[in-house]
Image (cartoon, rainbow, N blue to C red; front, side, top):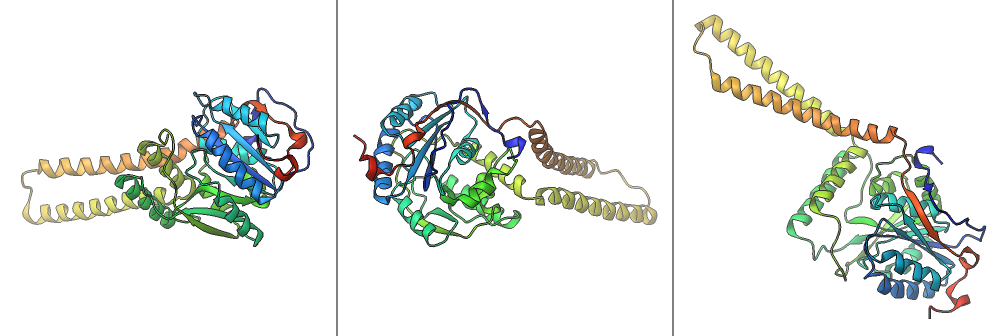
Length: 342
């Protein structure tokens, strides 16, 4: 594992050498205390029907509500459930990476805790995985509940990413997916700290397919991803997987230079033929502002790439695990062996 991606554990319970389960379910949690009881009931019902050995990993990403209390109660009630509490909010991409690194299953399912990722869809994921697919992702059939601005921004991002990026990002595909162990191991070897997981899933290379679904409405609270954060997240994704923004700044500079040469030539010829006329203050002002705008645009684009380099070379841990709750001695048992949750 690359040194840049090492986790840092402040408090850690040693993990036993229990047999690896067939399925791991990784769930990042951020202020989802109200949703966890319903998620617990729905998820365990689905996992019991699958008949696979499994584990559930709940990653508390610095919640400020009672999420960790709910996670601890779930862990005590079911030995196949493990809880990891991160030392602070490291954001969802880091929490997903923590879950992928800690997961031991032959396949790993990533899902949210707000029940907008229906646990029932896991059965479809597993069926496709058994057919030989290494990556099975959920594709939103509709975006009911999203504002018109958010739908438009999402559509625009996917179009731009497909045209500019080095990998193909399936439209409508999010983090809700099943990933085969081979791909999980590949993702765990990647050293990036500033992670755009949707792009990394595609970069890893896998035989993949999608499963369409209609996301149910959010039961409690509201999404922590504001339009501002989504926009910043999308721009980070493009910068992480494309050099085209750098090329655009170069093309813009070349275009302005060609226009400047053409205008300069025209003015020189005109002066030689007709003499010197009254200087045009408006044209000078427009030219200066145009050049200044292009320069600032180029500096901004360059700064985005330099900023990523700065974050990467600091080589800080991707996340810090402050506490872990687990009982691995029974973690590979199936629900049929232990019975349903009381």
